[in-house]
Image 1: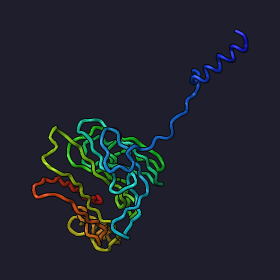
Image 2 (image 1 turned 180 degrees about the vertical axis):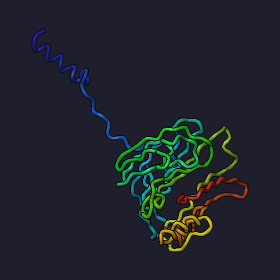
Image 3 (image 1 turned 120 degrees about the vertical axis):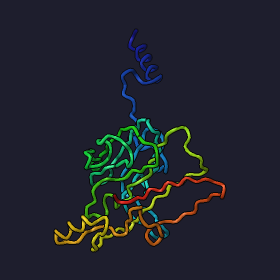
Image 4 (image 1 turned 60 degrees about the vertical axis):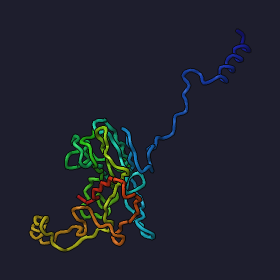
Length: 253
């Protein structure tokens, strides 16, 4: 084969496709596929912790931290006994925890600092892998300690519904609605805690100070009237319909 024939052959091969061993273009960075979706189901879930704005009512907007650009975060729908992976990206400047409330899962993925779960580092990521159980209406939320910072931890908008489905019959109902009760105006009070908070009051007295807590946050969740930051909405249904309305309170606990 002379030089001219070799060049012709090489040119034809290059036109036909990439040579063996040639590096192909790599795909761009992977972003959460369900970002912005109000419900995610399956076995892989992507959550992004970042600043968000929440419109509670006309001309009433709060800035907070949420999941996937919203608060409450997207509803996560899982199957009991089916292993899942929850990928969390933390775009804030502080360590974060995502706690899966009501699930019987190992401590290293429970999402609580006191149980020894590793944090999601600032501007970093972490994956939680577990098998959800038991079935039922649960929720997920931050478990970062807020202490006296009313812009951190459970004072933010980091909470959302988590549904673990179990069995072939999900229930006899026509519509399914999820209601989150949340007080968006926390503040400190100088009053002593009563009944449930007797121990805290005693501790405050021994320290020469008063107990500090959010007085308006009730054990059941919070106030939902528009003046307190709640947002009313109409839910259409007929007299013959059976509605399922789980409503765990987004309480700070």
